[in-house]
Amino acid sequence: MIEEEARAWVRDRFGVSRETAVERFGGILAAEAENQNLIARSTLDTIWSRHLTDSAQLVPLAAAAPDGIWLDVGSGAGLPGIVVALLTDRPIVLVEPRTKRVAFLRDAAQALGIADRVTVVGSKIESYRPTTPVAIVSARAVAELSALMVSTAHCTDSSTVWLLPKGRSAQSEVDAARAKWQGRFHVEPSITQPESGIVVATQIGAR
Image 1 (cartoon, rainbow, N blue to C red):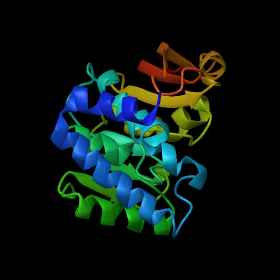
Image 2: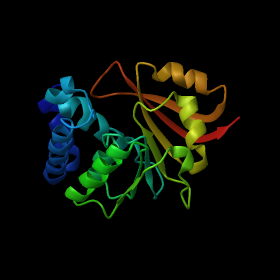
Image 3: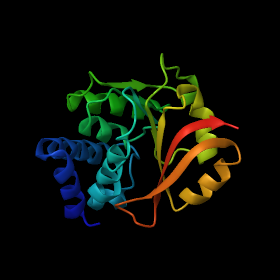
């Protein structure tokens, strides 16, 4: 997917105003990448296909999720969490342990006018305790699938939808996770990187 196709995908599904908001975030992200290693500099010229639309494609996959919080684990550069916040009206919780990235996420949410719906938690996911189980969990390049579920399961229940971009290892990680976790697992092909997969998991519980 080339840059214009990636941008058009967001515009066609979410409208021009939300596309513009995502573009603003892309500018904020690119500027901060000069100060800290948020994204590889080699991907700045393909920021839509590699990062923005790559994150946005998770939103339609959450269509069947219940109302409630979208929890993004290890948010780092705000991918996918900030993008999701710009494309939906859900409350978003971004959990990120690194201090400089926490500051970046808070500043970005404020600059984009979404700080009223975006909560940035500066800790590891094991220390975060939501008041009710979250509706959706996302995590981009954080940990192997089964390990991620171990660290995050206390935030979820059987109604939670897990949306986890996993690259080429998606199916092998699902196969390994099934030994420890029961539920429904599906690997959705990425629209931006056809060789990559997104794990969509529901009704998850430990065996």
